[in-house]
Image (cartoon, rainbow, N blue to C red):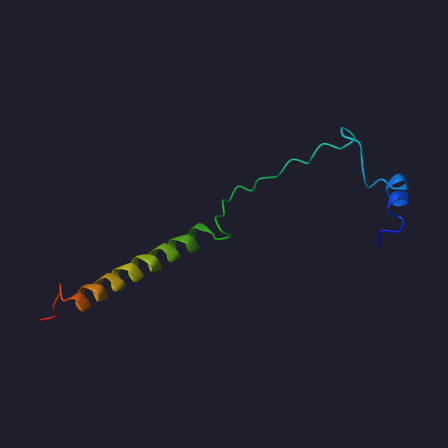
Length: 71
């Protein structure tokens, strides 16, 4: 693997001089923003599901601790 390493480094263009690089291509931004790969509608549904989960878990915690009693 390392037998001809010196010969390979002298002959090939693996190591370029600083300044020989081409300018990096500019990124093209899309108009639609995506956070974690989700659309705004998907994020809204996820937020609603999280809200309901927290509410249900809170009610269960209140029932278990006896702070809320079902009449």
